[in-house]
Image (tube, rainbow, N blue to C red; front, side, top):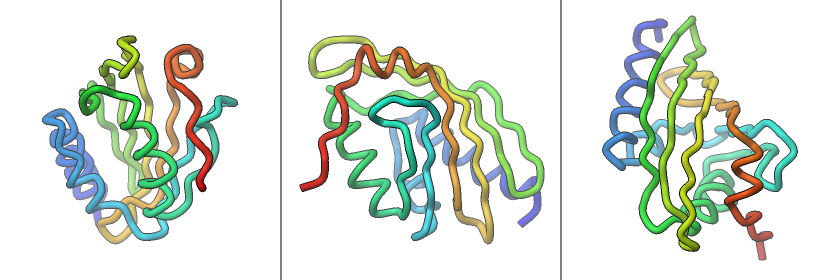
Length: 137
């Protein structure tokens, strides 16, 4: 796919996320998708494979919020197989705290699918507001 095609795909995904619709993002993830969260928080590290991302990252994260997170993109840049998204998230935790983070996501695409995502964010906010993910049983 071209740079323009990759940017359009990510714009479509982010527009859906801003409407609280995660389906296009989930559908675009390759089975071997890798999500890396930078930093040294309990959430930091690599989540390898679509199933791992959904079970070890997304499920325990979304369980901490009273409603889905609003994600609003502010800038999308593309160069070849890479698309960079700056965005803001806003949610309320089940304990009543506001979780309003700012993100920079560097995505690598191939053959119309998301292959990798590296996420940069306010890790101090993560440690202050979010509970660590529970360990898989």
